[in-house]
Length: 366
Ligand code: UD1
Image 1 (cartoon, helix red, strand yellow):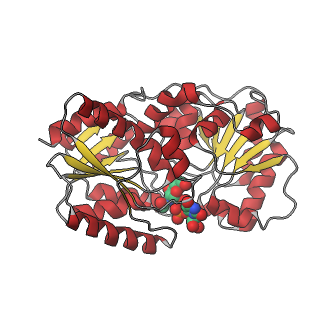
Image 2 (tube, protein in one colour):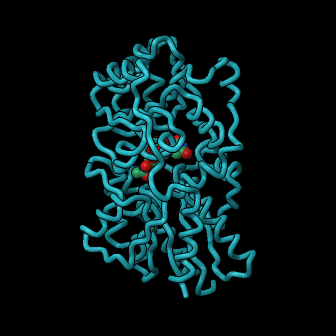
């Protein structure tokens, strides 16, 4: 490897949208004669074709150079397997820098491994904080940022958290949001899934739901209560639910699902964005979807008590409903009455974050 060759780490579904624009910007720089190169390392945390391969195909991400193939397991098992395998890879062939994105287990595990071998770490989407240590992602963020050298951030909130933790401004790069780069770059390519036509879904005539957080889906009674409350309040509209593998396990055991609930497979990116874009509202416990809904201007109800993305509430279309199902009814009243707040797009969410990251990397890796 040359001294300008970095490792780009991906592991789970939300990572794929975040690295696509960075890879594109690196390739553009190479076409212009630049010497920054990369090795794409997939940890294998997400391995189902619908959770992984479909995103590579649709977003034009090259096949990973290495797949660590860790698969499912407890968090400790996944962390240990990723660290062991990534360590071997780095020992075989060192990288000039390890670039991790987001907050999944793969992000943290590779950051620790690299830093312990003296490979500097860059973290994309650094500095965001929910303050909720019950979320595994918050632990991943805290640990990753504690050992990151270069912080690429999506918001002033993130910058403030990093400064408060003692990170100097010379290591913080406010670049914008690579997930939104992907959204804007692919907006013209979105298209409806087959079920969209089969169910004759119309603009603003259905609700889209995604749930996968352990606190919402791991207990069958809670998942059942959430689904019933959403469907009962949807005013007869179809409720479209692309089901994450984690959620599927319990959903399969709930009898008597509401008749307006339509469960579908996890959706590939272009069909998923189409689904969100045309929905009356989206109900979710994901963080990334609150950002996408904000940029698309779609009302978003988040079934969590906290968010690491406060800009989606303060500037965007997101409202934190909390984890009590009783908040869902009043939120629907407001939606149907046409009283949902309209939002604006947060600063630097302009489709150019990947380019900015690569500009900085070129200066950092001299
Ligand atoms: C992970 C991320 C979360 C992200 C989410 C998006 C962590 C801590 N969490 O959560 O931040 O929002 O991905 O999907 O990293 N499974 C499959 N097929 C797959 C992947 C997973 O069946 O391709 C199953 C696993 O066996 C496991 C469950 O789904 O039973 C959960 O997967 P896991 O990757 O551990 O965490 P997520 O809940 O997906």
